[in-house]
Image 1 (tube, one colour):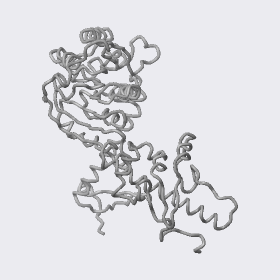
Image 2 (cartoon, one colour):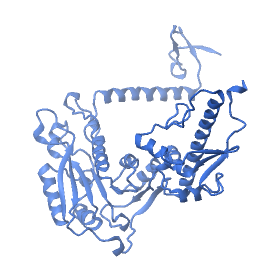
Image 3 (cartoon, rainbow, N blue to C red):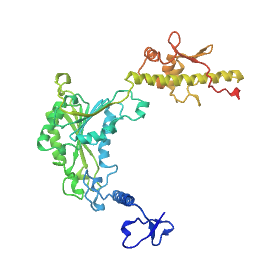
Image 4 (cartoon, one colour):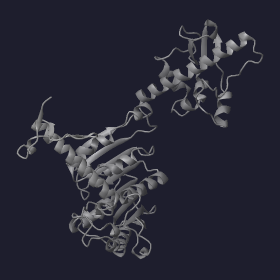
Length: 445
């Protein structure tokens, strides 16, 4: 390792290093130019990161208040929402999905697909669609909607298909007909006057879902912000509550919907008169009214470009169902076999009372059962032995919760198991060897 005395003439060409023991007097390590530049880049990154963290803590960016506006303002003038406003909007939709359990959901103007990622975990949803005008954003975020490893290990009960389409929300595409819920979160304020005029005709008139959620900024809240312009440079307008409600009621009356108004982002104390920061209209298609065009009556109109699509594993798919069934059967049979061996050992030792097969055995039966589940198990045929073979009736297996939830009856179960496990001669029970070479016997030691 070489050292070089630092002078004014060569200070820029070397990297100076210090340690906890103090700075080396007049000397430093000679470093290559590319390493020096790398260290400078890293230093600049962490300095900027620290500055960003401090600004976030002090809420120095308007982005914590309104979307996509990064002007620096005085912290005492900024309203901070907890949780952030966009999360409150998404949570509003999630609560709605949890209450009404729609099967087909579309998010118009889905952007970075974050709302879709939050909704795909709901077991009621079987078709999830996102539409956006920005194809590049869809392509870069599609992978976030792929199934996780855990969704293969524990598959859904129902099918789920997720699709992202590139296209405009004012274009008609028959693949979006017949949906239960369509969300338009912070969308309409990005539409110009021509598109805004066509929007109700397409969404309410043509698509005509059972429920529509529209959120948009409330301009009455804006004076509380340290800005005087629109909240986002791409906004074409921002309505006050009267303007939004007038528009929404006219649309609802024209297309036979009812509408309820609410919002998220409560104002600070003393400013309650301005209403929510984000105003929301929830539209319900009236039951007495005629829904939009019936899917079967429409010619296919596929104007959107499919950018990404994925299907999730579910118990509706036979290969997934078979894998889940075989895995659970083998696990349950092994538990019962081991418990039976324990019972035999107790009998051999003359322990007095022979333990019955319990609903829960501390070391072997890992499931905790309700009283109803215990009764169902106890009323089913019991396992039995014939010579060196151990049999577990299929009806017994189907009584256990993990197998009882699967969409199979005894006949279907028998056909799915036939080529994977050994069945009794009449096919009514799973048959295994009572003892295996790897079994541990206390008497062996």
